[in-house]
Image (cartoon, rainbow, N blue to C red; front, top):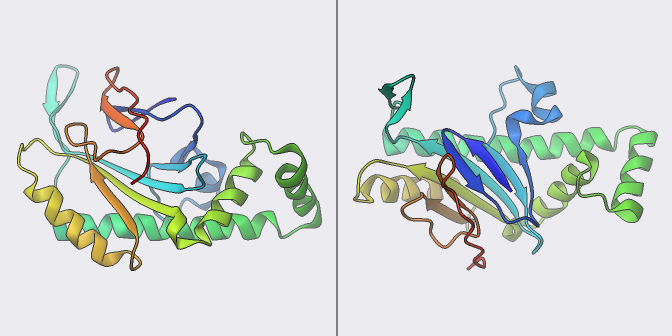
Length: 201
């Protein structure tokens, strides 16, 4: 499954269910309420919920001109990403409550969860995401951080600061195309992503 983000092309395993946060109806209905969100929400068949935020600070080109996203300090970036992780979890709770508010939605949700098992259903997706965040160990946080330097100092500083802002014991990966960190998905410049298919450590 190929999905673009920030001039990168992400390649997710075909048995994953992935949503782009800002393309969901939930985001559209809550935009303007101050909630931020990650770039991708993903459900893997082994029961994990993946929250994936993408930052691409490498040089990019448009209409023959080079441009770069403005890079902040590791402290600023860690705080920004931590808020996106937190707001995304809040959004999942909000959507789940909304889905269960009226009897006809609860009935449809029951049917999707217990009978149809339709993984393409938005009802199923949000219900399953909520079920997984109820078990903290089933949530995986990923910051996909493309930086132009060969040294990983910026990445490592950001990772340490971000880890301190997440729940204790949270599983956090900071990766990029040159350092994929053993993740079961990959990314590269548009058209160059390839699947890795590795297991979660």
